[in-house]
Amino acid sequence: MPHRLLLRHLPRRNRHLLAMSPEPNARKPIEDFMEKQGFVSKVHRKKTHLKPMARHIQRSNSGKSVIRSRVEHVFADQKSQTGLFVQTVGIARAIMRIGLANIVYNMRRFPFWERMNASA
Image 1 (cartoon, rainbow, N blue to C red):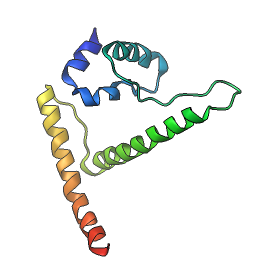
Image 2: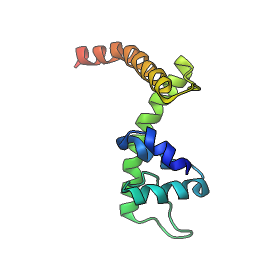
Image 3: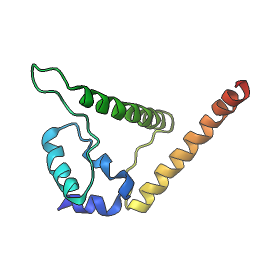
């Protein structure tokens, strides 16, 4: 099963990222497998047709959106500025390439945070 291969190489704290596929049919087997392994889905819940969304679901989706927006801005910046496209042979090389992209991103953001601390 390909899901087992994915889970073997992905750290436990990041395995929820596998279930963020936009297509429900592609996401269902992955979510089922992850639920059996004891993971919680981090995908937005949809409302039922012609009914208002419950408040607790709205709050849950809102919290997930805050996290997603922060992460997606970083990835978009890395992709546009450094041309990040990971197409390597082996997980070790992919981890190294992503790690270097993160270092470059942090080095570029450092002057911004220095100015923010100086003005505060």
